[in-house]
Amino acid sequence: MSGPVLERRRTRDERHVLRAGDGLPLTLIRVRGAEAPTKGPVLLVHGAGVRAELFRPPVERTIVDVLVDDGWDVWLLNWRASIDLDPVPWSLDDAAAFDHPAAVGYIAEQTGAESIRAVVHCQGSTSFCMSAVAGLLPQVDVIVSNAVSLHPVIPRFARFKIRSLRPAMQQLTPYLNPAWGDGPTTGFSRVARAAVLATHRECENPVCRMVSFTYGSGRPALWSHENLNEDTHDWLRGEFGVVPMSFFAQMAECVKAGELVSVSRRPGLPSRYASGPPRTDARFALIAGLRNRCFLPDSQRRSFEFLSRHRTGDTLHLLPDYGHLDVFLGRRAAEDVFPVILGELNR
Image (tube, rainbow, N blue to C red; front, side, top):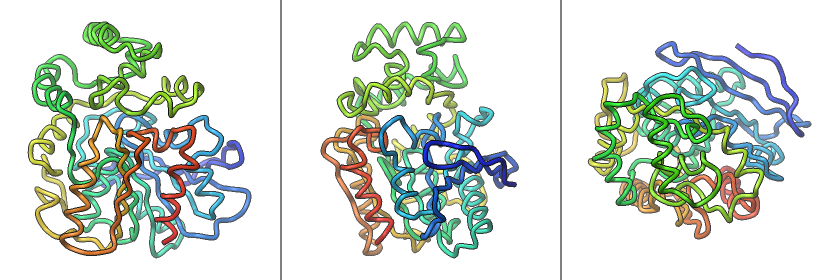
């Protein structure tokens, strides 16, 4: 169902509540510009432990602004990994089977569009690509994927953390939360925060430092500080939250397998996602920041090679001055990155 229309900068937000295939509540935010859209719907999907607001940092022009100005009908999804929803244990399988088909179907019903395009990031990308290659998103005809799609390749220290530290931590806590940097809530979180702040001294923002422990390997791991303006670096303190250990357990299996794998029985999903031809006609545009210390650029290179063995028309873009999230948050992303995304959506 649709909700109230909220004023925001040069746009208005229209909030929609829907149900995933297993009944879990999700939200979609339809962003309305001053003029009616002249192009079809484009869906933006965030990563793990963040929210749809991630695509609207305090920079002069966000990816949402650019898409609206270019005439697109912009929809932002809060799927089950969103910190705007009640926290639940989840797997990529849950999102692929239940969340993304529901969101795409809802947008198609609301707009009457025959095709939908998507810009997907991190675990929003992995789960969305799982759903697409399994044939569950027939309405989607273009997928712009940032950082990782079907082949997660992570730095050496990140492999050590997810293989060796994670099983022990999983016995002590059901989730990790970078927001512990500003406010630890349990004995484990206080110990984790103290350990991270003692070993990560790259900046004065404790949440930024906790993010680098939680995801990947680097100081920092998800962006280069020089790519962020001061307001964005501070704003990030409110944009990270709970990530269940159930997700990290699945990602450990995927890293071990060298490709995305299912860890639970969910309708319509295969056990592996890069062992056969993708069951989608959607064109993939893969983006990889060469400074990414969460998922190495080889993640997207391997997925591009996999896709190229089965078809033509997909593309790979390597960004030399960007990492993981500064692709969307960077002070110069509107000049360096967003034209690449627009170019692929408009092809």
